[in-house]
Structures are given as C-alpha cells and as structure tokens.
Image (cartoon, rainbow, N blue to C red; front, side, top):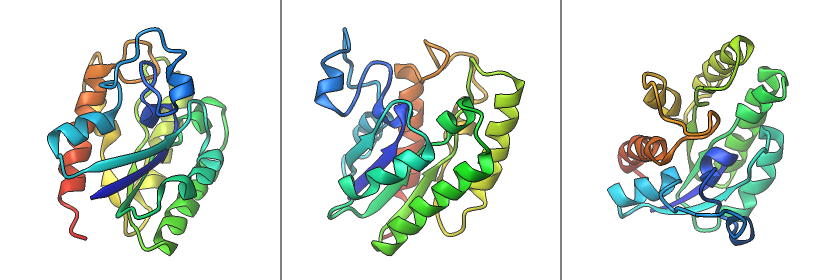
Length: 187
C-alpha cells in the first residue's frame, strides 16, 4: 500500500532526518529512525511511504506538496498546523487549509488520513489553547481517518529532545500509532 505524506518538520523527521537528501546532508548525525514513517513501515512492511514534508511550513504552504507525492498512491496522510500556531495565525484558517488539502486528495480518489497536531513542549498557554482548538477543527473534518498523534504523546512527560520535535522514541510511538490505523484501512 503506497502512502503519500505531506507535512512539516514532524513528517520530515526533524531534527535528525529529512526526506530531502540535500537537507539531510547538513545534519551532523542523520538517523532514519527520526521519522514516524520509518517506524510505521517497520511495524507494517506492507506500508510504503512517499513523503514531501518541509521544516517550518504552514498548512497553506503544505498544500503545494500534494501533487509531488500522490502518483499511484492509495492513501494521503495530511499532517500540519503547528507552524500556523507558532506564527500566531488563526487556527480557523489552518483548519480550512487542511480541509482544502483533504478535498484535493479526495478529488484524486485517495483515502485520506489526517494527523492531529502534537502538543508543543516549549509552547505557552496561548499555543496550547490554539492546538486544542485546531485539533477540534481537525477532528470535525468529515470522512477522514484520524491519526491520533496528539493523544499518543500528550500523556508522556518526555517525548522530545529539543522541545519542538519528537525524539527517536517519540517518532517510534507515532509510527506505531500510524501503523495501527493505516493497516486497518480497507481500500
């Protein structure tokens, strides 16, 4: 099953990985385990991931990546929103952008999975409220499969080494959650 992924640094594998070889070459000690897709594929070898994800991109910018990865894909995973929150943009706009990405995927005949926004360890109260509200809006998008990224990490005390991105262990947990959900999709 081919899974196309569009997103930000969470799906890129920051801080220890990036799907772009040029970016990856700038990482002192790259580690492919620093991506949830790697862990999901280890758990479910039938999942083949194709990722276009870029550090720092907002939902309106992620929308431009869809056509880069969807050829012959079965599922489109949409992940994003934290950079909208970080930049103080309205979460309603981020949700609308995610909905547009979902609609694009549907128009291509793909099954759609949407990851909710992770907690942000280095964020403040405003960011926490915005993440909660954006996740409410993400969960309201109809007819999509939900990847429970927020709830997978929220109960844990340590899942990030840098305060912004999942550690290798955090990516492992996200990959396990994604594999469980994606493997159950009946195409």
